[in-house]
Image (tube, rainbow, N blue to C red):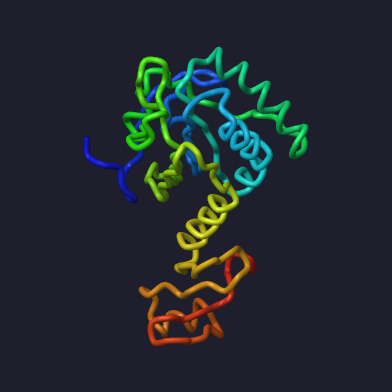
Length: 225
């Protein structure tokens, strides 16, 4: 199976989730999607992550993004685990309610399809010695194209503010022909895309600044829109 790269079409699949069966491409529909995997249910780092995504779900929705988790356990385990996630999150970080789907993948079918399995940590395996997934993230656009991939080791929780930041950059770039500089956040100056001529830039980005012949800055057009 060829490796999944940025620009690849996200593989379609059918799966059982905590919100019923899905066909992945149909579930995405005309929205953006974030697919993120977890090694196993009832594990500490995963519990903190899923709670955070539940609290940030409105931020994803504002951007037209659906979120879906995956863990290498069955549905009955997921359902019990969600109660722990909601309880822990509400005690530590504020009201928490996991109301997005979590894929049941005990046989690692989706994890294998998306190359999520751990090949580094020999302890990240189930009772049968089968590798669990690492903390993989796929950001997928409405055309089902993979736009971002991230893989974290099992021991390290992800930064979902960073994932939101990248989505902001991707969506602004698609709409306004810009790119974003280091440490950029929505509202900061952006870079005029190298494919935009200076003549075009005068119309598209009045008042842009040429810092270097190949680096032109302008105000973030997504904020002014």
